[in-house]
Image (cartoon, rainbow, N blue to C red):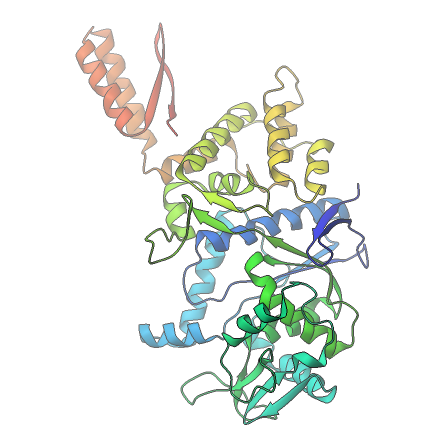
Length: 451
Ligand SMILES: [Zn+2]
C-alpha cells in the first residue's frame, strides 16, 4: 500500500516514495527541557508516533529510523535553573526524564535515536564553519550570523511576505546584523552559562543549527520526512532548511515537511495568564493515557484541535466500549486493510477510529475482537489487556475496586433483608464515586465507571 502525505513544501498531498525503502528516515523536533511538557506539546509527539507506527507497518519495524532531539541548551533552561537554584544539568536531566514518562504513558514509542544538543556541539561548529566558508554566514564579535540574502529562495517553506518575515526575524535581537532577516548560528556565552570553545571564542549554538546538525549526523544530509508543530514552520524550519541546504550544498533538507495544527483549550488559546495551561502530567492524573491519546487522534492532525472535557469524556466512553468488545482473551490479529488505508491517506486518524468503531460493532464475527485490537494497536491504543485498562482507569479516578466490590456485597445483603433505604444509600454513595451499578432481577451483576 502506498502512503500519501500532505507536504508543506508543495502545499499538496504527495505519494510517499522513500529515498531508500530499506531505511525510511524521519526527524521530528523534540522538546526544550526546562519545564513539564503541556498538552499542546503532546500533540506532535502523538501524531508523529502514529506516523512512525504506520511507517513501521508499511516498511517493516527494522526499516524506519526515527530521530527526535532534546534541546538541552537554551536561554529558558539557563533562566529556570538560576530561578530554582539548581544546576543546568540537573534541570535538564530531571525534565527529560519526566518528559519520557509522560509520553510513554501516552503510548508513544521511544524514537530510535534521541540526540542531545550538548552532545553534538562539534557537529554544529563544523556546519557553521562550512556556512562561513561558502559565504552563507559571517562572524562578528563572537557571534556568527546566517546571511539570509545569500540564499535566493529563502522563505520557500513558509511562503510569507517579506515584511512579515522581517518582522518575525526582528524578534531575535542580535547585534551586527547585516540584514534584518539574518539569524544567529552561534553566540558568546557568559561565564555563568554553558559554553564551548569555538573558532569564534567561547560560546553556544543558536536553536536552529541544532536540528540541522543532529538530523545530518543521524539521518544524513537529505532525508525523507521532517515533522513538527505548525508554529515551527517559521522561523525554525525555514532556518533549518537554509542552514542544511547551504551548508551541505543539498537540493533539499527533507523531501516532505509535515506539520500538526494548533491546540487550544475549551475554545481559548492556552496560556498561563488565561489560567487554562495544562501539563500532560495534570491530564494523566485524571485520565488514562489511552483516553488522552484517543481524544487527540479524533481530530485530523492538520486541523486545529479544541481540547475539551466533553471530548475526553466521550473518548473514555469509546475506550470502555472497545475494551468491552475485545475482552481479555483476544490476541491482536491482522490489521484490517481499511484501517491501514485510512492512515496511509495523510494520517486520517478520525477515519481510522471510525473504521475501528464499526468493526467493534460488527457483531457476530468471530474475528472482530482481534481485528479491533490489532487496529487499535497500530494507532498506539489498547496496548494493555481490558482488565489492565480498567484497573488504570480506576486508578486514574482514584477509585478502589475492592471498596466497590465490598459495597456491592453490603448492598446485596441489604436487598436480601428488604432494606431498600440502605440499598439506595449504597447505590448513591457509589454514584458519587463515579460508579454506576447495573442491576438485574437477581441483584447486581456488574458495574461500570461513569464517564
Ligand atoms: Zn528543529
